[in-house]
Amino acid sequence: MEFNDKINIDFVTLRDNVLNVSGYLKCQNAKKGVDVKCNGENVNVNSFDYPTRRDEDIYNFDFKVPVNDENLKITINSRDDVDYPIRFREFCNLSHFSKYFVKDNKIVYFNGSFNVMDYSYYSMLKFEAKELIDIIKNRPSFYGQAILFRFIFLLAYPVMKNKDIWLVMDRKTMADDNAEHLFKYIKDKKDGIKKFFVLHNASPDFSRINQLFKGQILDCDSFKHKLYYIFTKKLISSQGSEFDLNPFLNTNHQLTAGICNLDFYFLQHGVIKDNMSSWLRKYDRNPKLIVTSTQREYESLFDEGYFYDEDVIQLLGLPRYDNLTNENVKKQIVIMPTWRNYLADKTELLSSEYYKRFNSLINNEKLIGYCKNYGYRIKFMPHPELTQYLDLFDKNDYVEIDLESRYQNVFNESCMMITDYSSIFFDFAYLKKPLIYYQYANDYHYDAKNGYFSYKNNGFGDVIDNEEDLVDKIISYIDKGCEMEDVYKRRIDQFFTYHDHDNSKRCYGWILKH
Image (tube, rainbow, N blue to C red; front, side, top):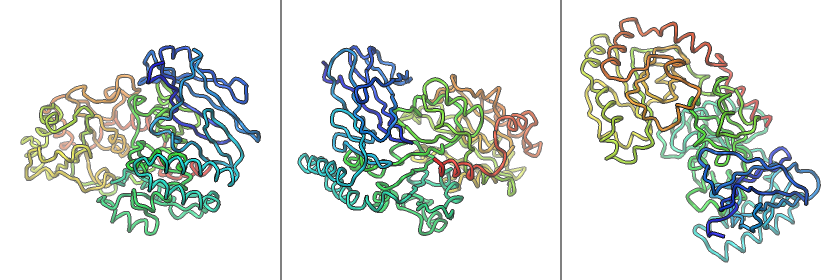
């Protein structure tokens, strides 16, 4: 047996009286698979062919076991008759130092096999004592903080287990996305739920959010945030990365894995148009909800590579769309390109076509001159990943580089948008205002080729690959009073499932019931 040969566990969840375990076997004979038994009886095992796990030495497995009143003992064994060690992956909700969790009046614990038993405080006390002794004996990094929070969890659990707490957040350092707009809708609901919006105090949005949600805001990564996190039932966010969600991540989060056992509801950051299964995959992100906005987007998440259960994907609409309006449109053109993941540093950016094209566009003399003559302002809103490199761009007195404005305000006020592959164009198209895709090259990092969306056949504006034609098209729209062409208006009507302002209402209703 090789040193790296093992059974790796991605997650262990207990939801609606069903235990779900997902992971993979890595060894030379991995394709033989695994056998799973529950109390000696065979369990049906599914194997998913994840796009990022197609190694011949890897066998992905996923199985579910109904949880009833009897105690359960679940074993996983490889079919090549080798006793491989079982290890927990980094973001699993169990770990070497945290081998049990309590949920829905059950205790799930690992002792070489996975076990389920009825909850009792005495049993929980015994399990926790073992974990604390192990942590104290080994003294891993940040063990002192872990012991503190584990003691708090142990002492407060009998009271807190019946409390319903929700945490809602966008990025750690930025609001104004689906989570903020949902929170506006739910914050004052009389439903017996204690709700908090989470945001770092260094965020430019913090003062505004603090005024908006007085008494209901948690400073991200603070002691209070961590305290509520360990007792939270539901975490609702527009972001899907553990780095944005888990306040223990930078303090050896594996020491607190078992006591942090919430359900995650993914509002999404935008409409999915490409095949994103290389990122949004069940084994890394196992949410209880993924919100979609269109029928084609909904159907695409059942395509190859995702492997989510059918009830996880819901067609509810993005909460931030509830605030889109054309009431205060100005003579303002916004340029909003997305990022490129392959640009790792300043040197790569400066030599990239991405930098050269957009630096040239925001300094185009013909465009600036025409906009001046007709009273149109130009606003350049860089992607958050680009802001650290803005000093590299040439500046002029006319084009505003905007790092402060809220996206929703910019969408509502602008009369035209130029973007490339960014999914924010869906927000703008929803308002039926002119949109142009500036795609100078096929250099986007997500798999657009295997997605359902074709910019030329399904898009809401012209696809242009050179600056001269792009400027001419912008001028053409200005000459026509910035009116979207009928062909694109019809596409928008056919594309979006909902054209109301009830997306937050639908999302809240579903989360409340599940």
